[in-house]
Image (cartoon, rainbow, N blue to C red):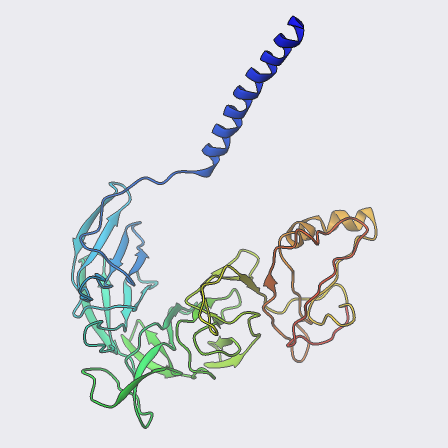
Length: 375
């Protein structure tokens, strides 16, 4: 009996110390947050841009108290963890964009005054060397909740957003709002030329859109995904200056995020659904056309079924299986196809459908926009 009690005591002590060890190790891997110095005023819908010197430029927004739209701006210094004031803008801006140019300046475009609801067509440049803002050109129409994407040639694509229209549909370029106007999504897009310091119209979106995302892809094109107006996403081709329709999301969303991954795919996460309006936990991957190595199984166009047929084949596809265990992978027809397709496969929790050796991954959804093809 004494021996049994001693054994129980030793086991209990071991359990306590081992649990403490693993709990500490787990906690250490989680990372921590430490408070930094505070901003000078509460801000929402402002922008934050990392400058070439490593500092972060905080621009505009409103205080969400009396809806005052802020003209003040600040710089965050990572070396000291402190904020400091920098030059003020010509006008306060809310839901604007701020883009770091290749010359090191920051282009601030559009936005709205939350008190007067005036939208701005004006743009400003921030110079980190002098800490000042200067005016630079005007867009063809006032807009906010738009996208601004730096292209490989150094120009900036400004697309979509909210604007104001007369009841007959005529745009209100900027300035105080006259009576009888309504908010409406904007279809037009423009290019900012840093050398000329001016904007020029380019091809328009096929579907007027706002609160969408604009992501520069590895091929130089820009993916315009989601938005309040339901419909397929679009691709902007800088070579032709035109937008073309591409795959539709499985779940319509807006005010989401879109992140270019190292493999060239775009992760679209969260946001609100368009109908009904509700926050989302779902995410989707967008893929450009890529070579198909396995013919799609019947009834699952646009997806390919992966199967392990030999040990050598398993080894060659080990990296693919690791990815498939987390998300449904999508591949389209060959790049040489006359009409390659794109699709948004929904990133799902497929723990109930893992890929095991000797088994085929069964995909229970398909992309309507994909086309048949052969390996």
